[in-house]
Amino acid sequence: MAVLSRSPLESLPRPTLVPLLRLLDWVGIVEHSVGSEPDPTSGHCTDDAGRALGMAALLHDDIAAEVIAECCLAQLRDSIVAPGQFCLRLDENGIPTNHAPSDDATARALWGLSLAATRALSTDINDAAMDLLEQFDTFTSPYPRAAAHAVLAATTLLEQDRSSDVGAQLLFRNMAAVPRRNPERTWVWPEARLGYSNALIPESLLAAGELLGDDRLLRDGLDLLTWLVEYERTDEGHFSFTPAGGRGPGGRPGFDQQPIEAWSTADACLRAHALTGDPFWSDSVVMAAHWFAGRNDVGLEMWDHRTGCAYDGLRSDGVNPNQGAESALALIGTLRDHHLITTTTENWEFP
Image (cartoon, rainbow, N blue to C red; front, side):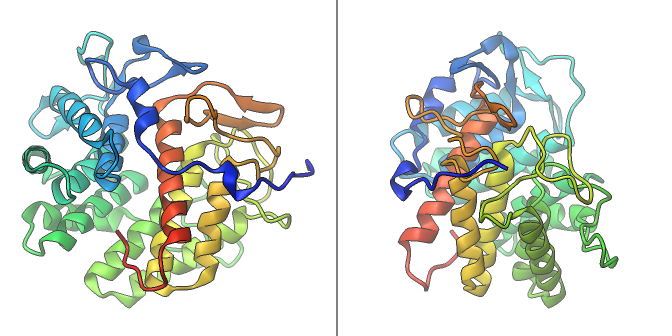
C-alpha cells in the first residue's frame, strides 16, 4: 500500500457551486467531460440535474445558486416524457434519448426537487419544484438506492410540512424497499455485495427514523453505517471506498473508486452526528473529505485546483482525469459537509 503524505487542511477548498457553471449549456448540465472539457455530445442526465438542483438549494447563498437552479429546473421540465416519468437523458439538442427510464435517476431528481421546494431559493423556484414533485407522488421503486433517495425526498418534504401529501405518498410507497441490516454476523450489509453510493441506505433509515420517532429504524441505520464506515476505513486512517464494480467480503483495496462514495458517506455521517453528537461521525466526515485531498489508497489528490472539479475515479496507477458532473457534485457536497462539521458549534441541527 502506498505511503500517504498528510495533506494540510488548507488543501481543501471551501464549498462553492461556481465550478458547475462551466458544465451548463442551453439544455442543462452536461453529463461527461473529456479531461476538463465538457462534452455536450454525452448528453444531459436527469439525475445530474436533480442533484445539482439539490445542491443549489442547500448552498442557496452561493453566487451561482439561482442560475444553476433555474437551468436544472428547465432541464427537468424538458425531461418529462409522460405523466410521472422522466427520460434518462436529453441529447445535445435537448431531445430525449432512447435510453430506458431509470428509477435511480428519477429518485435523485425527486431528492433535488424536494430541497428546491423547501429551501430558501426564490418563491418561483420553490413553486416550480413543487409543481414537478406533484406529478411524481406515486413514484415507487423496488431498487434499494432509488427507494432510499425517494425516502430522503419524502422526509425533506414532511419535515417542512407534516401534511405534505407528496411526502407521505413517497414515504409510504418506498420505505419497505430500503433494506435493513443482515442478521448474519459475518456479513452485516443487507446485500450480497456492496454496490454504489452505499451510505445512502443507512442515511435513509436515519432520516425516516428521526421523522417517525422510530428507535428501531434509528438503531438499524446507525448499526449499518457504523459497520460500513469501519469496513471501508483502513488502519492507516483513510477511506478505501468500494470501487465501481462493487465489493464482497475481503478484496481491499479495489479500484476504480469514485467520488460519489465519499459524498454519500459524508452525508450519512453528517446526519448521524446531528442525531448523536458522537465525534466518531464528525471524524468520519472529515476523513471522507480528505479522501479528495490525497488521504486515499494511492496518496493522490482527487480534484483539479484549476477547475475546482473532482476527477472521475481513483485508479491503482493514478486518477481518471475526466471531470464529469457527478464527480463535481460529489466534491461540492462533501466539502459542504466538511465545512458544516468543522465550523459549527456543538448545538447545531441537520440543515
